[in-house]
Amino acid sequence: MKLLLILTAFCAALFFVPRVEAQERTISTTTEYLQATPTPTPAVRIVKKRIVPAATATPAARATPVTHIAPAARATPATRGVSVVKATPATRATPVARVTPATRVAPVARVTPVARVIPPQAVPTPTPVRIKPEDLNNLVDFIAGLPVTSGTLATLEKQPEWIAYSNSMNSRWKRFDTGRLQPIRLWTDKELSHASTQRLFYPFSGPDYIYAATMFPNASTYILCGLEPVGDVPSLEKLQPLDATLGWLQASMKTLIDAGYFVTKDMNVELKMSPLQGTLPLMCVMLARSGARITSISRDATHAEIHFVAASGGHERTLYYFSADLSNAGMGKRSAFLNFLRQTHPDAVYVKSASYLMHEEEFSAVRNYLLTQCFTIVQDDSGVPLRYFDTRRWSLHLYGAYTAPLDIFAKYYQQDMADLYAKTTTAPLTFGAGYHWDPKTATLIVATAHAMKAPDQDTPPARSASNTHR
Image 1 (tube, rainbow, N blue to C red):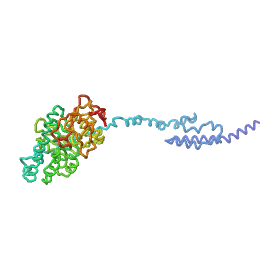
Image 2 (image 1 turned 135 degrees about the horizontal axis):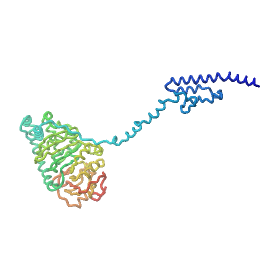
Image 3 (image 1 turned 90 degrees about the vertical axis):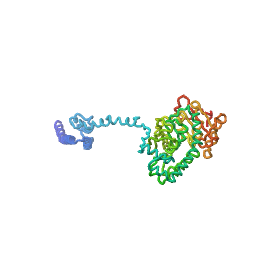
């Protein structure tokens, strides 16, 4: 029996010792590989595939968890002695890199309110025209048909073309001043002397300075606005050929002198085809004809700024002209012109021959601006519709008579306006207003704001002046 046990132990030793030695050699070789390899993870996975299958392993081999070498945290005491498997600082430091503060604050930067604020556009500073005031006024007088005493222009005045132009302008302007402007002056002295009119806003005006200055002679600032281009200051080079240049000037002024307003579609042609393009030459003619002396002019593509002294003398005044879109799209929050109005704070408004644009919702922004930010509105029936004047803010004074608009504007007839005129005693007008150049059919309204604060909302009022609503 003892002999049988000895033989069995001897055979077992012969069979198992080589396998154990082979496993030890495998572990030793693997340890050396891990120590020489900078990235241990792939090597450990290769070792797992080379481990002896569990089906053929002895109990002693199963007791050695070679298959758990890959995850360092679960290594057995036998493998913890392998320093490379336990200490892999590069691999363990990776999660720290993923949660660095710089990565975590990135979303905060993307939602910072300051980054989303879009400031309103500012009106650019116009470029001064480099002409001496004396030379500038001589040039302006020349294109206005007024005499110049010296220089090249005095020589050009002797030409038949200029003489004929000057005689025509003198005759027509005298008739215009006597028949249209003088009655307005008399009416203004009586009816608007109480109004605060230091800064006048004249929307949809085009270059019509003369009516603004006649209706509001005491204003220090005039702000005109239309779609017509700014143009440039006249120059000697642009005056030739003289007959063509003066002919275009006379044609451009014709409707204003004869009827009291500019026709937009006519100006679109005349101000582009004339050698003196844009609104600046026309405004200069009106300044000269009113007796004003220009001290300086600045301009750019979108607006002009003219400083002048009126015929009555006194302080220097400013005339602005903006080529700007007054529709809701053009009067958005970033509008440079709207930003300019907010900074200038016009206190008075004059509206004439405005094509009834503020009757449309497309022009509700400029309409609401006038109703909430200004204190005096003088207008014909083409301005703000009667139904938008809230009696809690506005007092209305009616002049003339209300008649139906011209046929092309027939849809803008205001029944509430007709009803209000029918039950109100109004003073007659001695001059035409807007499209109704005949004083007998002209409509004029003076709206004066009460002392109460203007409403902030851009919505139609709860009550209109006629207590009716469309």
